[in-house]
Length: 388
Length: 143
Image (cartoon, rainbow over all chains, first blue to last red; front, side, top):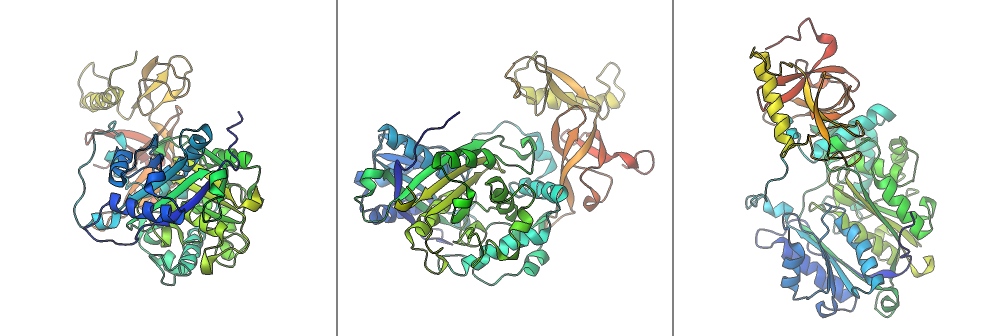
């Protein structure tokens, strides 16, 4: 069951966010996607005319690649609209490397936009076609939070994880955000604040939940040979893996174990590295329990030990393992599908551009995307020239 | 045999349960039992209802009825700003499938993981809800 060998075959050569936070009612998801695309391409020394591979997902837009290609005026010869929730863009990176290695495209643009925050002021978009009727609606779960809350409750029951452990995750994210001028939430936060916050779906409180912001992001990928001729130091894809086992939380086999166990095993095997080699971690923290469970499933600690692992500032600034150095979905930016921001921050760390939050000498970064209700899991391992 | 729309098979059978408890002779008189499918080939319990077995890929699925006894696998209490708190639970039925539901008859924050529960069909939906098994016989027969 060997996966493809893509180690070092492709590299990220440009990354950018759009305007973040709250952009107001006059701009839409595709506007932010295009703004991010322009900035990422400019950083790469490329333009829309160079793009021949397009990878994109936008919530509520079933033909997002067509919307974005038309808006940008690109005519891709390879298009991938894989939509697996917030993990989509890490999946796109993997797929882009495959497409580039196969010769299907040369310059891949991965792009995302959302106005989730500003949308609340202009009324909901019409829903799409009906899905398979779900018997679950009668029980009024508030999704996605109740799905993650059920996992958190089970993890606490099985392993003695506490709300204080979860609060440590929120506090670490906030401390990183205080070092990131682009972060949305930068006020000081304590464990006591999190424990005192209103419970929405037990055991999760409002401060265990990600932000709702606007925002877009873009990542430009090309083959290793071309990457070396471009302005920025290439950030190589060393390994990638994806896995999903369920869609709805009631179908998740074990609520304490995610498919990140599989996705990360595949990524580590391709990259020929292990968790001990990783200098900096960017993972999808839609809720505080995500960070705890992903650090276990990505191999940074044993199953059930995530709560203790995140305590004592270990994942915060100055800690042994920097996690979510931008402030994460909890404190930096969360427009609904956060995965692309894990790639952007990982690339900045490996280029040494992360300012006050820089992990000195970082050569290997792990980016992990999550989609649905702990459903889709995609892991990418990135490295500098030195890591090859 | 498989059916064209298994989710309808589920709701129709739940509705029949309610009629059955109302005393309709010959109906599937099955208070508290939960319709689910079993694979004719690998015997896996299948829920929610489907046209194909997710364990082995067989399309030979037959309806069966759970006795309605199970164990709370996980629980979360939702606290809406404008309403009473209510629990959402995942229950592992003894026949080997898991479903989302709620527990009635006890305060929401007293629903514990590991609690033994029994199913009941409510006309509302119709839907399956659970009561705490230990409480049965005393004050559990609330409205």
